[in-house]
Length: 185
Ligand code: AP5
Ligand code: MG
Image 1 (cartoon, rainbow, N blue to C red):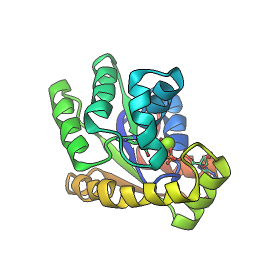
Image 2 (cartoon, rainbow, N blue to C red; image 1 turned 30 degrees about the vertical axis):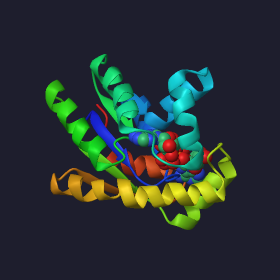
Image 3 (cartoon, rainbow, N blue to C red; image 1 turned 90 degrees about the vertical axis):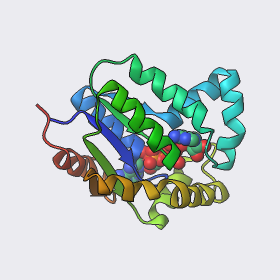
Image 4 (spheres, rainbow, N blue to C red; image 1 turned 60 degrees about the horizontal axis):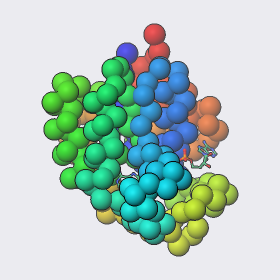
């Protein structure tokens, strides 16, 4: 039974969708930095105002800001968790590993979702979030390739990567994820 997971993959691969299902199935805390940032924007906080312009361009919000959000949530939580959309670059991965060492809570699995660019573009365009227009999606993809994809090699070296084909119906992909990270109790 594993209860400390990261979900990694390009924008639109289904990290949020699958993370939510698995978290519900296993009673884990689902931490999506994107969702938390959007909630700050919605609430009109100072932090939200700082994040909004960056998110609209599809760039990464500052490491310090995102780290503070994750740190506060993990420190105040007892039990398993699932991180979605974090870490997103090597600096965040390093900071996370320091935090987890402090908490003595090592990552058990990194679920890597694979999906063709054409399909994820379609999925995002049909959703239509503020940052789901073609130009911004292309930028998010580029940011993913340049800054986030290098984490794959890092976690692979640690033996943590579990690869999932993210094409197909939501429930089918969920079945693959569930199998890959072990059956629920
Ligand atoms: P974030 O919210 O993390 O967005 P993202 O990585 O671009 O990914 P998405 O949430 O768009 O896609 P997803 O993989 O979660 O897929 P989903 O399940 O939603 O980040 C947004 C922004 O916030 C960033 O650009 C950045 O500015 C900032 N940010 C966030 N974290 C940060 C960090 N750590 N550091 C710095 N900045 C950060 O699915 C997509 C769509 O497809 C949905 O409509 C869904 O219903 C549909 N769908 C899902 N699965 C299927 C399926 N199997 N079949 C058909 N449709 C499906
Ligand atoms: Mg998401």
